Amino acid sequence: MSRARQTGFEHCALVSGLVTQEQLDEAWRVLRTKPSQQLDEAPIEERLAQQLVDLGYLNPWQAKQLLEGRTKFTLGPYKIVDSIGRGGMGQVFKGEHTILGRVVAVKVLPRHKSSPEAVENFLREIRAQARLDHPNLVRAYDAGLDGNVVYLVTEYVPGADLRKLIRQRGPIRMHAAAAIISQVASALQHAHEQGLIHRDVKPGNILVTNDGHAKLLDLGLAGPLGREAVNDPRYGRIVGTVDYLSPDHIREPHRPTPAWDIYSLGCTLYYAVTGKVPFPGGTTGDKLRAHCELRPLDPRRLNPELDAAFVDVMADMMAKDPRERIGSAAEVVKRLRPWAPGPYPLDETSFVRSHSYRTRRKLYVARPLPVESLALPETKPNFSQPLIEWSTENDATSLSQASRRTEELSAPASGIGPYDQGIHGQTLLGPLVLFLLIPAVLVSLVFLIWSILGR
Image (tube, rainbow, N blue to C red):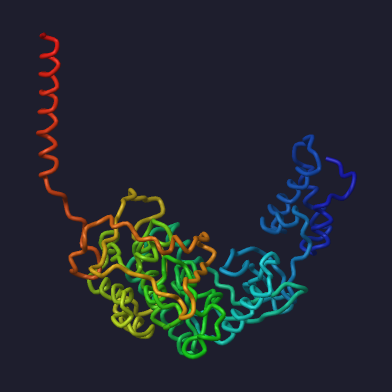
């Protein structure tokens, strides 16, 4: 394998500073020991990149970026070393301070989203993050501007978000879930005391470490409480993720209260112990109406290990009427304390079923509450239609869908208990009539044919 000239990949790798010439030469020496093949330049570059990954000089994300021609891997004093994922308002990277060596998370507003409004929203998130300091909130360390790129630096949490954890390993047992939700509730209490409402509490915004410590992140949709709420550019809009929106958020989005976050946290707890959102399926409009009018399936139908007292706490967090809901995040912590005296380390025993076990999918139907038909009010006194802004997990949906009535697929609820008490069996009268009717029709048909042929 001969080298007529330096490849484009080599040029990018050297300019970026991620690898040295000595490391490239070592990778070439290893490649030369392998069977020679007739390859064009692009595959050779890919083999060289893979060899650098195998030698530990690059990670797969860095190799991919270099193959695409990128050479800049710094933001201010931070070196970008890997990609973590995407947040509601930007991309998140793993970074390292070039002098201190501290590993951090760097959130960047993508260039294609860098409109004046998006930049202002991102700066608002940075300021909101800077106001908060709590062990169960991802802490903000720094912020800066590199060229036209605005970035926020936060602590790096070596764990997975709750949504990914449950999708990979199944629902979490009662005590582990209570420990996680209690920590998040403690973080929310701190935010509420500082005059902020999160507005996007959901499993995807909760990071969990293997030792059971949980941290709430992503204040991209956070807003002020009280008199300051009218100064929020999102005032009067429904913002958040549709599977976790509270009925009072949907009905009166111009009156933000901490009760919104408590309901969303209750839905998050429901998801943690069942592996399903309270109202799966349907359009965005169906889910909006379900939060306001329907009763979710009793979580014990999906996780029989839950005890009645625990389910009562969950029901009180998810009460439709905010006056009947648990009054504060601090009270949530108190109510969950019997199941969560402290952090609960996560291991295989913390999950209801292992990753290898899969139950058959079943269709569960939410049951309607005994309430009058809901008419969604104006979201702001001077507006005739609600303005809906979703986080990036949801597809954009027209406002006409949000007002469509949810199909009444089940009988009215009995009014007993906070959750659906099961779908009762149907009467035998219908099948019995059908069983007798079919033979009678067949006998009549045979008799009619015999009469015609006998003439």
